[in-house]
Length: 339
Image (cartoon, rainbow, N blue to C red):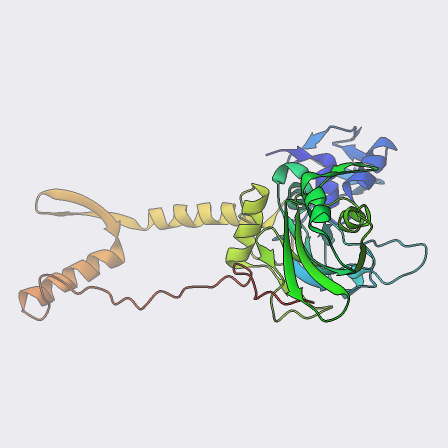
């Protein structure tokens, strides 16, 4: 199966796709000895070099996690002001890089998803995915119903029409502050704040509490992460309209375009061939059957015991213990509390 060249390069942790496209355009990448071009696709057995060095393609299980971002962190690795960023709080990777699924501005806290799967991140962020994002918003001052209705119907901002698909009143607070829960179907820069500002309202605190079907787990405090695995990983790919990848457990990778899974497949084929050679045929009751030698001995032994009355002719059924049900950590929303 072929893949886009820039996607292959980015998956090895060399940089983002846009950066890899620049490398391809500048002639730093070759495929099978020829200069690569944008739009090229590569197979597993193609020889790819970067700056004259062979690319050792290593395929690992994608990783995903949820992060409870505090206010005062930026969602970028490069900041001219030197402010702390969210990536410094994430687990270190041997290979690949963490990709943020969307962004939160410097003063916004709450739920962020990260993955090492670039295609998954792109699908989750694309407007066509129609994934809703829910925020808890604290407003300074009184809010009129007419202002809320205007934001439901849509407000023309400098980058186009924007609106909340849902607005609900939160818990009342003493004093001038009021809490609201709002839902957006996109993630434009500072969109929540700009919508309220369009109505002359001041947002004094903002926190994202949900992305699609994922909520912040109660046990994940500010600045903490939690891996997304099992049923939650399947749900993550389902939201993006993708099938979860069937990749082996993480381990040491192979060499140049020789993933471990391919070598294991060859080994399995060889084992199957050897097992086939150890099988023999025997005749019973006028019919010829093919079965492993060990099974022949077991069958004959059982027949002898059955004849002597020590084994029931109906056999015994295997005991089965109760199935263990795994519970999704993020499948149910937490009880809503004002941040």
